[in-house]
Length: 184
Image (cartoon, rainbow, N blue to C red; front, side, top):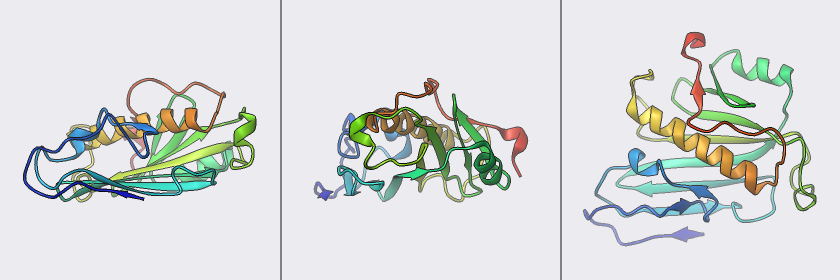
């Protein structure tokens, strides 16, 4: 499903919610230029009862990618995935940030609504968020685009945690926390 507007150099308008209305877009404007090609989104399985789906957002030649999928949620898996990348957290959710600025977040979903049981058979939803404006930039605490990406990753995590019907541990307010002291 593609939702497009004409291209041009007019001000880019971002809707209040993206990815079929499932995710708040409050921090998205910080990841796109103010003008240029109009906003559009492409969805794959994002609105269906599937174990995974993806959403691509474009504006002004930049792209944001969001993916969700079912995933394991255990301490041994946490140690395995955080060993080679920078650890991130959002309350009880954990994950990592890659060297290229991708944020992968594992959301606990131990208590699920009955409607979700058919598509989420394991203990977590994994959400991957990536923005082209972060690639090939210096990844550090001062990087404003990375800060905006951490905010959007948190918004996506909280919204998808709710969409999946997860009643488990609460996710923290604010952006994804990046543990800079453990950066490889």
